[in-house]
Amino acid sequence: MRTLAKTIDLVAAFDASPNPYMLLDDQLRYAGMNQAYLDVTQRRRSDLIGRPAMEMFDAGPGEKAAENARQLLSSFQKVLETGESDHLAVIHYAIPVPGVDGEVVYEDRYWSCSHTPIIDASGRVTHILQHTTDITELEKLRRQVARQRPNKTTSALDSMIGGGVFRRAMTVQADNRRLANERKQLLDMFMQAPGFVAVLNGPNHIFQLINGAYSQLIGHRDVTGKAIRDALPELSGQGYYDFLDDVYATGEPFHGRQSPVQLQHTPNGPLETRYLDFMYQPIRDQAGEILGIFVQGHDVTDTVVAAERQKLMIDELNHRVKNTLATVQSIAMQTARSHEDPRSFAETFQSRILSLSHTHDLLTQSHWEGADLRAVLEHETEAHGPNRLSLNGPNVTLDPATAVSLGMIFHELATNAAKYGALSAGDGRVLVDWSVADLNAPRLDIRWRETGGPAVSPPDRRGFGSRLIERNVRHDLAGTVERHYSGDGFTAEISIPLTKEAE
Image (cartoon, rainbow, N blue to C red; front, side, top):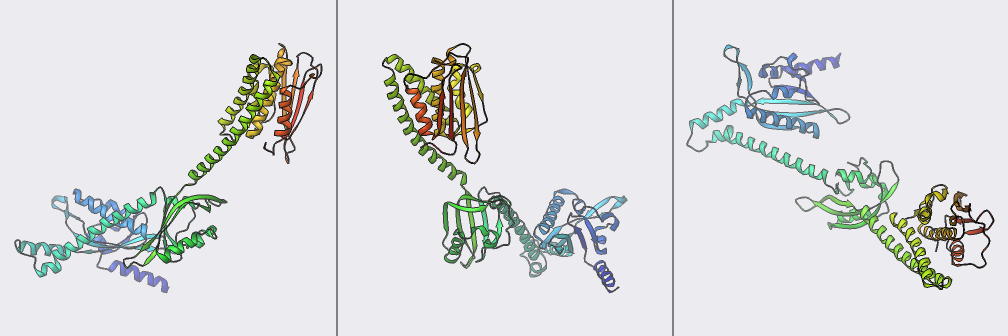
């Protein structure tokens, strides 16, 4: 009963106050008002409760009324956003009153307003209490004095209660609005900056403000109000705490370029290495004392990774060029030994160089990261027509060295088949099957089988093609090769490890 009595007393006191009060919810709808407010606005309580307050304040004739409504709305929004009170020293608001023959006319009134937030236990603004004071008589007195002394300097009385006070109030209010707009513009620029930005406060480097880019950098964690050692514990041992401490202690800025940092870059994700260009700049007060640190920078991870990749590609290219030149030299020497006729030498040498070129084309398409086994086979056998070769096997990505070696092997096998084997006859075919065995130490098994061609027998001597196949499989690929000659056609079985790169 005592609590109920206190509630009734508070309501009665609120309603009995001679000053107008109104209460708005967080949607700016009327939640309550006292009798004084109803009297000055000439409204009934039932007409206002639950209605948007700005519908009432938008009323009134002229551009001046619209500007006053915008000014009032801005004050309400500021209270909702900041949770702090806001004051309007002077605002013009005309009151609708009955005129002749029931016509509504507006009576000029001037008010001074205070808007106070009502905050719940979680810190959220739930309501706004408006307290207004009618200062119309003060304005009328100021104008009366001004009319009585139209050509004379302002009197002391006018300065105290009229124009001086009134003008100063209007000036302060205008300055406050201008500063608020400028602050909002600067804050918007801060939050929308393409680089990451943060403001750290005090010797413990407490996050006071961060922008969207900084939030993205740290995995959208809620760090505002937390010390950096608590907010970003993964930075421990990486030197960044020490950099901040030094800047705060010495006042000397610190500049980092392409600095690696381990960060949780995605929500609840693992640590990732990012590279940052950044600046730690001390923030000082008017006396020169350091208050905090301004952090600004850019995530340059993509640039650093691209540069490292380019260097790796150049180093790989240099290595491949040397190997390719050595291979070309070997092909030239071995081909020359097997072909005394310049014309046949040129034809054979050119075909082998083109085979090497085909594989290089495939590797270039993947930036020398690898090539697909099926694609290598298709490139080396396409001259013999797709209907005469059958390729069966899973997708297997070959590293560059393996792709080059197998490309040359397939070229020699296809050339021999066209000269002496299944592809030399109209009905002959080549079947190529492959599989990957033992996933713990994977090996690639390839079976080249010719059918429908002339009977074959082991050659009397080992030519360059046979030596190239054996050398590439056993030396470059650390594998094995077995060749079989029978009346049914030639067969080659090749087995190589996929975990060992050619040296």
